[in-house]
Length: 286
Ligand code: GUN
Image (cartoon, rainbow, N blue to C red; front, side):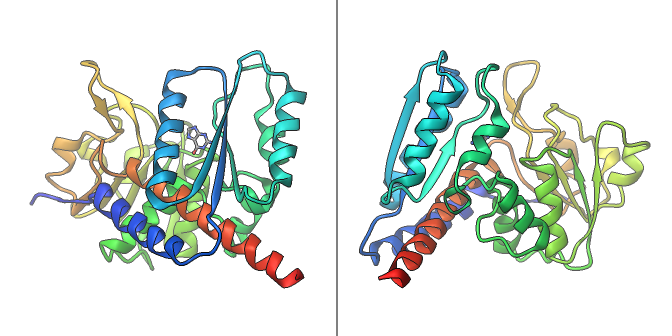
């Protein structure tokens, strides 16, 4: 058996077309403001791709490049300014931040209505309750891929490897909201392979090349690879030993071209949702 490839580029383009179509019927353009502090090369590429994504679907976008020496107060003031701006519907502060800045203070400062990363405690709470309007981008992108390929989560054994606030924890919540039976594994999990082998749907967000080997995967499982690593030859690779695992899985996401392309599309989706919510709310006050 050889697994069907879950094509994130395809699902991502379909999502962007849908967003573009919706935007073409709106009187006011959704707007995303991105703040980047310092000059981390990977972050610069991510931010450039976010700006391009905005252009592609017809959003306004603004990128604020702040020096690595920016103080907490200067960054806080910039967020306060963007919180107040009527044409900014989404605010994103690119992570990681330089070590002297407090990530938690920064993410909590964004008003929840504009929190398109869904990192604020309020939005995390909504995700936990299952009534969120803004969803964490990577997990939401994975749910879109499953939906596109008509992979039903209800009643399935779902195993998430990794417990980060950005991916592992919210991923588990979205799978639970879709009626999956969910287990979260992490670095202290005992007999990891025994747990991962139970999975009908296995999501790996660990950050180690070749971490998920063939003997850890049940035959016929759906395997989702969130990893973005470089292997020993410098080639971009996920967490999953793709060649071996794709022989026994039913579906698998490649790296690159799987989960990665969905993340920005879901950021655009959140910006659209935030804009519609803010515009409706303003409308109701008139
Ligand atoms: N850096 C890497 N991934 C992300 C993300 O999803 N959001 C933000 N703000 N920064 C990141």
